Amino acid sequence: MKNSFKKFKKYLPILWVVLGITIGWLLFGGGSGTDSHSDHNHQQSLGKKVSKQQAEVWTCSMHPQIKQPEPGQCPLCGMDLIPQKENNSDDSPYRLVMTQNAVALAGIQTSVINEASPEKEVRLTGKIKMDERQMFTQVAHVKGRIDRLYVNYTGENIIKGQRLASVYAPELLTAQKELIEALSYEQTNPELVKAARNKLRYLRLTEAQIKRVEKNKKVQTNFDIYADVSGVVTKRNVTLGNYVQEGSPMFKVANLNALWVVFDAYESDLAWLKVGEVIKFKVAAYPDQVLESRITFIDPMINPQTRTASVRAEILNQGLKLKPEMFVEGLVKARLPFNSTALIVPKSAVMWTGKRSVVYIKDVQEKIPTFEMREVTLGQPLGSSYIIKGGLKKGEEVVTNGTFAIDAAAQLNNKLSMMNKNVEIKDQKPKTKKEEKKEEGLKITDYNKTTPAEFKNQLKELVKAYLSLKEAFVKTDATKASTQAKLVSGSLEKVNMTLLKNEAHMAWMKHLAQIKSATQAISKAKDVEKQRTQFEQLSNALITAVKSFGVSEITLYKQYCPMAFDNEGAFWLSDKEEIRNPYFGDKMLKCGSVKETIKF
Image 1 (cartoon, rainbow, N blue to C red):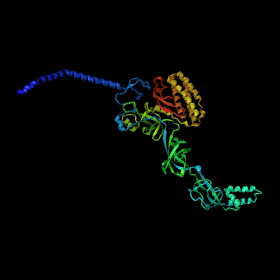
Image 2: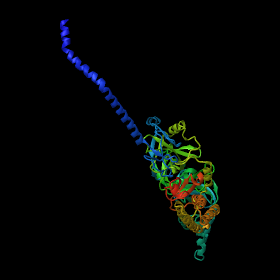
Image 3: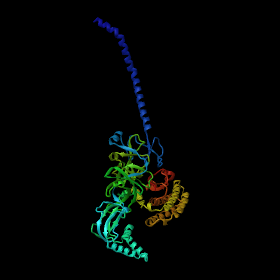
Image 4: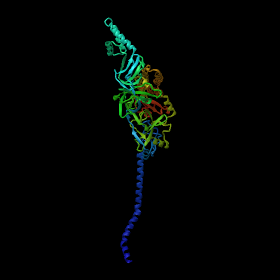
């Protein structure tokens, strides 16, 4: 017991030191810890504030695709930008924000669209046919009875000069007797001999046969008929013992060394086919062999039963491998003659909503996957893809797989989707009834193919004068607009309407009256707003005329401002894709969007 107490006394000083340190920390260290904790909270709060400021994005209420890191004005309409909400949602009815996991689960894939030369694989079916220019009829040259027949079946090969049949012909007997009788008067009347010989030649006797008659002075009872051409007998019209008249068809003969390949082309494929186009084809008899030819003829008539037109190619039949009536499958890699390059998207990217077609675009500027619905104008189908006439730009990233998954998500998130009738193109609100009425008024009839090049050049000069007038309105210069309107009138007078015929002429007369009325009103008005009202009428008439008749060597952009004339909206034409609004000028210079690219 005493030993244990002695050991405890030995360690007592150490225990007092530890106890003192603990009491000191409790009295002074706690406050310090609180301050440290407070400092930490302050730094954390400050960090959140700085992070929030760094993450703040400014956007336009009219054009939500505009995003800037600081306050300013919208580059499209000039309105003040407003802060975007902190969360990842997007107020635009056209845009859908998704998580990376959702994108992966939906299997969404995108592709960057670029311009390419439109090419379509046109698949055709048809048959091998005999060349109509190589089909002949072997006829009887005299009337008589067939006593011998040397060609006995269809399909037999014959060569020119080959003996075909032996005929008993009373007419030939008489002609021979006349020649033998005339020979006795040859010294006194040589013309009689000459006439008798010519008669036998007319009856298709050879010189050797005629000389034999003259030499032997004996009448031959039977004469041979020889082939006029070489080929294959495709039909035999006579048998042994038949009586034939002069000119009666005995055999049909065809030269099968050259054949036609006749394909059936549907109406939708005719725009892609032209004479001279290379066509490759196969026949079932030689599946590993690809034959090649060129289109030599396209039937100008449509078969009313099959709704197809015949497309013909020619081929040499080496070794007579190809047989008439063989089925063929052809392929033409065709290009549109009037398109050099165009935007092309896969069919999987396009969804149809009745009259409209829409695609989803990925916003590459957003870190979080964001997709925007866009209405597009489709051109010619290219098998597995489409030509895009309007609504997209080169370099944009289009959703090519998973479009329906995005559309379903848009529906669930109360966004515009494929089933929503109010879908509209980029940068615009859904079409109002007024806007739809304006679009309806610009419906056109296409006279482009029948319009002479001279008229198109004259119309181009009118458009150039119009573009100068448009720039006067961009600068809100009433005096200059009045002057330019007179120049438009001058260009209009130089357009020769007699170059157009029938319906096209009457259509131009209607546009002429509208353009003339609007330009005269602009030139007389002093108030720029009144001039702009007439400019809209002029623009509508000229847009319709340009799309109806076409212009030479110029690309135009049909542009639209939804806020013009108290939100009624108005169209105009420009030769530049950049928006320069003629209805507001400097007030809202960039307000508007490209509705359509017009190129011929």
